[in-house]
Length: 349
Ligand code: MRU
Image (cartoon, rainbow, N blue to C red; front, side, top):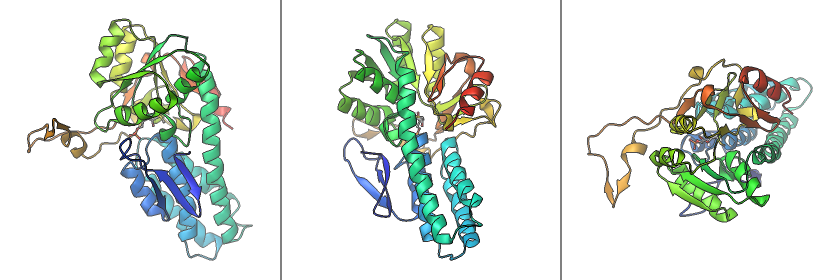
């Protein structure tokens, strides 16, 4: 089953906030509700957010009462702004919305408003289908880097739940497992929202891949002890020079991997590569509600004092010098990334 899909004129999405305790699919009929669902992380993970926003724009088309193409385009433009503002770091969100707007605008002069509505929905469906195909291609390239017997550290959730289906870094691990390679995964729990402990562990259970959850600060211990052969992570936005923004904690993992000579591979569809940004310090970094940090409980009790304050930075940027290679659907990029990433992006389907 897909994480994000269109059915009976509605956008349907697995509610990732309540997994693994409960499995529920929520239905959406309005783009504003979709934007809220993205902000609240009903749906999360860069490619999944992109697909959700694309279907959100299709919903906006059907919400618009305009009977003229130009009126519809104006309504879609307003909806684009709402959807794009839902979360700042994952570039797939803006990429998906901009792609649909380009397609709609390019043929608005010769199509009726109803034709345009259908065109936007068709393009959203195409983008979602492509996401699955791209992930499978990426997984083949990435799995070639994995040896039988490898132990891998994985951060956050990059699986089927973070995409339309199959996954990015976890998709690589899944493909290597299906190829018959015996692998073991250390799953970073990924504070504060615990996407690793909740979502990645839940997915690995279903795929039958052996894993153990570790607290984020345990990764350095196992890397130094020589117990880990590779790190695979995703990315929410990768700059032209190969600096990689990903879930908070990725930078510390990359530093420990580098210090211990362990290869570090982000797995990144070309839709996540933002060639307009020359380096990673230009990537907008989301800061979320401190309550996500302060609300943690231990043995049934709130951990922090009642008046405590917190900072909740959702992503960090791993400098390219710590990155061994970047796996894309068009092949693996190696340094110098300015050259190799550009080549792979220009191959974009
Ligand atoms: O805050 P999230 O859960 O949306 O963050 C997700 C990640 O950081 C993933 O690693 C990233 O989207 C890339 S993999 C699909």
